[in-house]
Length: 394
Image 1 (cartoon, rainbow, N blue to C red):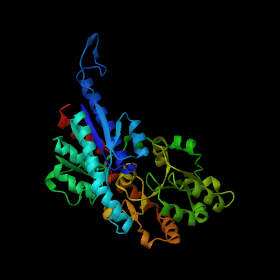
Image 2 (image 1 turned 90 degrees about the vertical axis):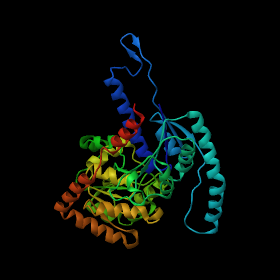
Image 3 (image 1 turned 180 degrees about the horizontal axis):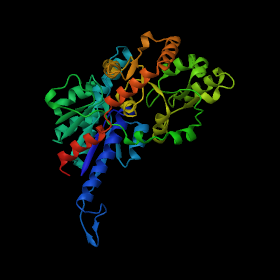
Image 4 (image 1 turned 30 degrees about the horizontal axis):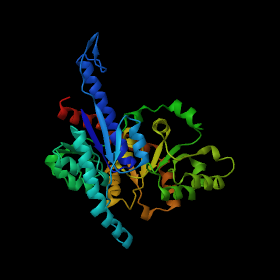
C-alpha cells in the first residue's frame, strides 16, 4: 500500500503531514492486530503475506522538511516546483517567467515519471506551490487525491487543484472558495505528542524559576525577525514582569542572543531563555508550563496552541499570501481564545502594556484558555487518517 505525500516545504505543511503519517501507521497496526495478524507476517508458526505500508514524499528541495520526514520512515524525493510571486518588480517578474515556464513543467514531468513507476494508491496533499506538479501529475495518471487546506482563505495552489481532488479537508468552519459539496471539516492535524508535555519535566529541562508568569514567543519554524525585534526592544522591562521562552529561528538566533546578552540587566539572565528552534520533545514540555503564547497566526501554530488550551496573542504576518494569517487570527480570536494585534498598529510599549493588562485580569486569561480548548480539534490527524484509511479499504 503506497501513499504519496506532498506539500509546500515549510514547517506549516510538514508537521501536519507527520501527524497524519503517524495516525495512518497507528490505524494500520490496529487493523492488523484486530485481524490477529502479526505485523511481521507470522501467526504462531504460520506465515501470512502482508501488504507493506509505504510512504513517499515528493516536494521541492528543503533540507529541514526532508530530515523531519525521513525520521518518520518516509522516503523523500525532490522535484522542481515553480513559485508564483504576486508582488511586482523586475526581479520577481523574471523569476515568475522561469518558474512558470521552466520549473513547473519540468516538475510535472518529474512527478509524472516518479508516480508512474511508484504506482501509489492515493495522494495526500497539504497544499503550497510545491504540491502543484505532484497533484497535477497524479490527476493525469488517475490517482485518487485528497487535499488539506489549513487556512480560512485557501492558498492559490489548492484553489486550482481542488477540482482534481475527491475531497478537500478543511481546518476552519467557514473556509472560503471551495465547493461545499467537496469540503469535510477536520481541523488542522497536530502531532499528538504535543499534548504529552509534563510540567515537572519542563521545570528540570529548562531550569524554570517559577518566580513570574511564563510567556512563550514563537514565530513559526523559521522564527520571525520583526517579532524578535519587538521582544528585544522591551526585553529589560519585559523581564521585570515575566519569564520568557523565545524561539528565535535558526537564521536569527546568533544575532538575537548576542544583542540580548548586552540588553539584559545583570541578575535578570535567568528569566530569558532563547532557542533557535524547539524540537518536538522540548516544545511539548514548554507548552505545558507557559501561561501565554505570543505567536504568528499560521494555522499549524493556532491549532497546537488551542490543543494545549493556552491563551495567546497572535501577530499575523502581514505579507502572508492573500492575508491568510490575518483571517486565521480573527477566525480564532473571535472565539475569545486570543488577542489579535496587527503589526501596522503595534509598537513595543503598546505590546508591553497589553501583556500587563491581560495578566492583570486572571479571569480573562482563564476564559481565553477555555475558549482555546473548545476551538481545538486534537483528533484532526486521526480523522484525516481514517478518511484515507476507509477510502483504501485497508
